Amino acid sequence: MRKMLQAALCCALLLSFLAGQALAGQALPSGSLPAPGQTLPTLSLKVPVFGQDAGELGVAGKKTFRLQDVKAKVIVLEVIGVYCSECAKQVRSFNTLYARLARRIQSGEVRMFGLAAGGTDLEVESLRKTGIYKYPLVADENYKNHKLLHEPKTPFTMLVTPGGKVLYVHLGIDDDIEDLLARIKEALK
Image (cartoon, rainbow, N blue to C red; front, side, top):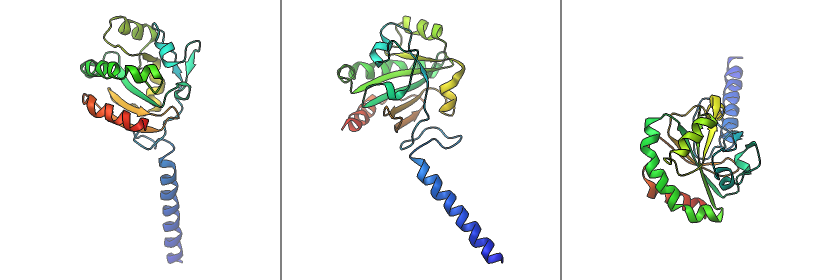
């Protein structure tokens, strides 16, 4: 009887492991940050309120949008904090990245935006008006989407497809723009 229980327990553990492996490419495991190969949960994002940001992302005229609504092959998604000092240190290199991606952004291959975790429309608009951030910012009031991403510290950078497949992640300041550009080019192949 004991051997049968052990065999049943082993089978249950094996099935549980295999089920987890099958889901690894589909959804975020509970409590873990997004990782390459996983699929993000469906994010319901507020349409940016500043200038042409909504038009640049192709979501003008809507109140909310999903990654699937963004017409691009690759999305550079940077999770920031409006008052994050580390994010302020990274912004110069990401403005350079944005400028270097200009041709690919204009052609619709790439889109780039910052998700301001906890930021209100007013805070995001004020931040954009300063000119510090050259690329679109999306307010995430009440941390709604930040929580769906399992609350990464900021800055948190991801390359994702419009379908939500995670291609690359980096927690903390990511100022190796050449590496990031190479990863974007590789993802566009």
